[in-house]
Length: 102
Length: 102
DNA sequence: ATGATAAATCGAGATATCTCGATATATGAA
DNA sequence: TTCATATATCGAGATATCTCGATTTATCAT
Image 1 (tube, chains in turn purple, orange, red, cyan):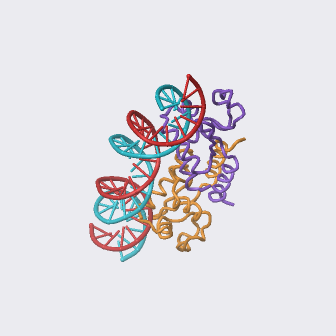
Image 2 (tube, chains in turn purple, yellow, green, red):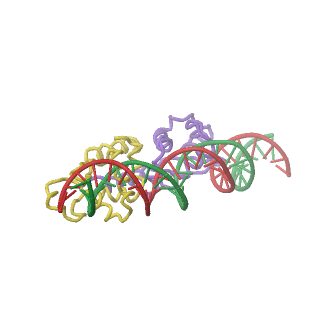
Image 3 (cartoon, chains in turn blue, purple, orange, cyan):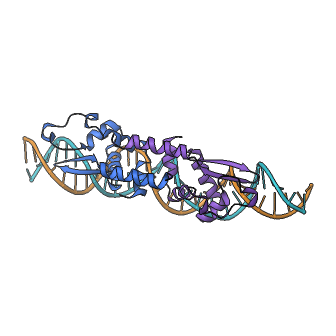
């Protein structure tokens, strides 16, 4: 996790909204039966919800992943993204330590 | 305080550094005797420490102020900036509420 | 008034980000 | 193998940010 990349990733309302959506799987359509046991949400569902182009969402997810805020797992032709709660909490703590007065 | 403006203001390492410096007045040279009772740090001191141009620092402080993270007070020809601790804490709380899982 | 100092504003070139459509890659199905 | 689907990558135009030097504004001292 890199605080500069993390803040840059957060510096966009849609990317923050995606992080919020990913807090709850029920913000998206049900998974396909063959994905029922998998964690995370596929890019297509995120794209539909965000209503931006496929390439934009793919690159957004790449930024969030590169910042360490989400992790991805490929299953067949799908890539599933989910929050990295530990990394997100660590990033927030680091930012708070830096920015808040003790 | 506006979370979009605040994150944008934080999305720059020098501006974050300035916020850190402003946590402790002793990060800067002593105030002039006639300013001894005033709170905050003048733009010139911040500029010297950050080693960027006067106009850049003036505009950085404007961004931080516009984001609500600092407040300014003019005294004679000097403008003194200081952290708005309440607003900074509120901003961090709002960001945490948005980004952290409950 | 004049001149000096501090800060804010302006205008601009360089760089980065946003967002798209088109194309490439990977996988699964027929 | 061929086709369809999901995602990633590429290239580009529009917009925003960074940072500067020059100028303007505000204030103080002479």
